Length: 220
Ligand code: GLN
Image (cartoon, rainbow, N blue to C red; front, side):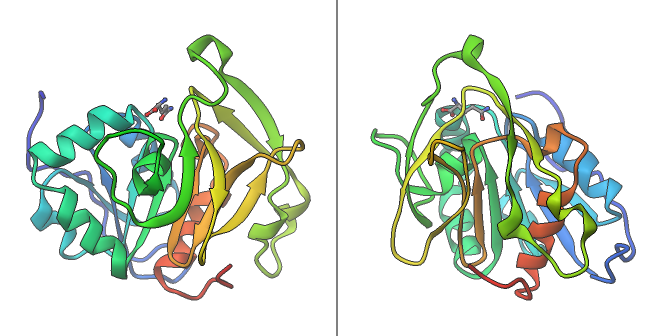
């Protein structure tokens, strides 16, 4: 892997939401830079994460899209698997696409997983790269009081995306396609999306995730 091990693109100060927090983006592989850009748009202190010690002062973590087997192997190589799992027991984590797979307890095959969310995922459920697609999603379950944007569907990009095949225990479906297949789920402070909100410029999912780090969202 190229690049520096100790990173960081950080901003200081409060976000416009009055929340004094720091969010990490796991930066082993995949679309981490896009999440950093979204967090900077929201004025949130942020850091690229590659080492276990960097988790210490975070309020929440985003695991980006990419390739879940590669990212899982890198988690093992960087001694991050167990620290990430422990972090997720007490802090908010949001996994997008490959990140959602890594949060799952079951991905129907042998690969390193964080085993944190009571969801079963099916990888590449829509086919190969050429079968990537865009869809308008009803995200009314993300409603926050006074947000006039709630009526507007969320434009989502699905890129070799997984489906959240089933939710159990405390996990709940948050967003589904019109045919009922689940593409976003929440389990307390853990969030999984099959698609890539960081590619849209629409910050509503990032804002929703920030509320989970404070535990003041209406938890599903
Ligand atoms: N298909 C990838 C995987 O199984 C995920 C794709 C993505 O994150 N865009 O890990």
